Length: 131
Image 1 (cartoon, rainbow, N blue to C red):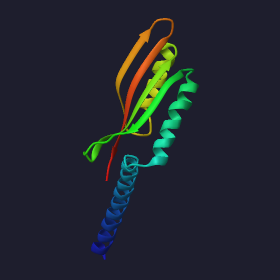
Image 2 (tube, helix red, strand yellow):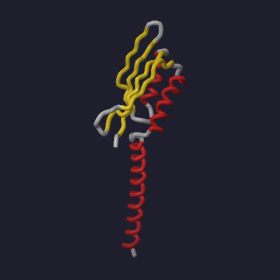
Image 3 (cartoon, rainbow, N blue to C red):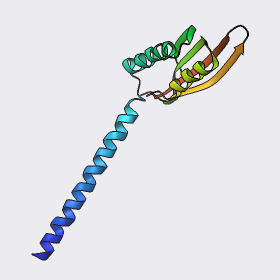
């Protein structure tokens, strides 16, 4: 009877561990799923750029996006070029919001020029998995 009680206790501990492992795996899969091509998710990201620019009082002068065409299964899948005008602090807030996106985003080229106004050119890539 004592051995049976110990075995039941051991099995309950194992069950709890497997349940926690399963939740962790589900969480990680949910994170990876955002890397797969998904027009709705990417559209929401593109909309968020405009919304964040407005939020931080940064004017968008030019905004283009193209689907990256390469043979690799993982890498840049969406390239975005953005030209903005705004003050330095607000522009940095916008760049930070891009980098803190819910997608895997790479701000890989930043060019700032200040004459009468600060103009910033950004090259951004969204990383993903092609299948």
